[in-house]
Image (cartoon, rainbow, N blue to C red):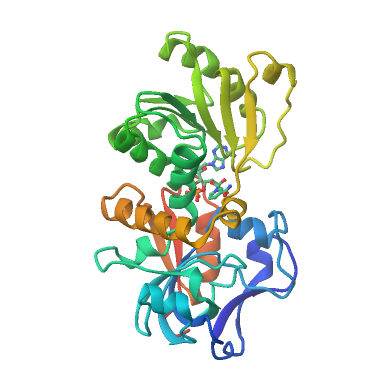
Amino acid sequence: MKAVVFERFGEPREVLAVRDVPMPADPASGEVRVRMILSPLNPSDLMTVRGQYGRLPSLPATPGFEGVGVIEASGAGWISRFRGIAVGARVAVLNSGGGNWAQYVVLPERHVVPVPDDIPNEQVAAFFVNPATALVMTQYVLQVPSGSWFLQTGAGSALGRMIIRLAKYYGFRTINIVRRKALAPELKQLGADEVLSSADDKIPQRVAEITDGAMVPYAVDCIGGPGVVDVIDSLAPLGRLLVYGTLSGEPVPLDTRRLMVGQRIMEGFWLSEWVKQKGIFTMLGLFRQIKSLLSADILTSPVAGVFGLDQLSQALERVEQPARGGKILLKLDTPT
Ligand SMILES: NC(=O)c1ccc[n+]([C@@H]2O[C@H](COP(=O)([O-])OP(=O)(O)OC[C@H]3O[C@@H](n4cnc5c(N)ncnc54)[C@H](OP(=O)(O)O)[C@@H]3O)[C@@H](O)[C@H]2O)c1
């Protein structure tokens, strides 16, 4: 079979290549073998390849934390029997160890999620990483109440758009920071209450105007760098900021008195750590919630392009382009 492989950490375009690799062994009891269809190129995959992610694989390795595929063989353990997962089922493939940018993958049965027919492959491919993060941060961790103000950076990202739609659904109000003001009409159309530009707006000042001086009790940031100080300065007393990404790659130049005054709280969020603390029944409940919010077009991802394995270098070039406007997916079920 074919798989995308890297033998050293580095720039994805330099270190990733499509290789012939042995088929994985037959699934043991409690495992399934999945024939992969599509997998997204997420920021976490690219950070792993660069050797910058929180947990790194031993090399050589294949990237890919999520995707969609069809179960081809099963070691039918109790979880598959309990959830009615059989050979032939189309599933979301949540591969916490990476490895989904391959034509076949073997993994524990609890890491696959059967999905209803009405959700297209392109959406099942991005079933978990972003939808679960958007939902868990706002509804499980911060528990943003209806009517409350909520501030986010990177609001034009696939995940930021999910938060905007979740806000409409749960009734909280969003202030959205983007680096390109041109995104404002699109985000307003999705339901954004306010859109600010990190390039043109004085963020804490604008937040004060929008909230009549109250500032925001909840915020999330996926950019890092100096902009985080503006987010902290936009928090109300006792306000909470979850940091969940570092797209700028820059450190935060923070005078910690900004947190002390007002007893503001800045905390980290990492989905894979959160998941580790949860039992199977919480996870099954979360999967059910995601499926229904996907069917309702709330946790869907815009798709900017689908590339075959033979177009890997084009896919890697496209995913790095600013203003790409959606997810880039790798198509794994075509011969190369
Ligand atoms: N902690 C967790 O467990 C967890 C889980 C899932 C995702 N995440 C994080 O969530 C973030 C969003 O992921 P995604 O898949 O939704 O991303 P995405 O769809 O690839 O979008 C990235 C967005 O970030 C913007 N951007 C990129 N670099 C930027 C910079 N230096 N300054 C300002 N804006 C920048 C882009 O703006 P343009 O449109 O202008 O190009 C684009 O809108 C990532 O940081 C990812 O690592 C974290």
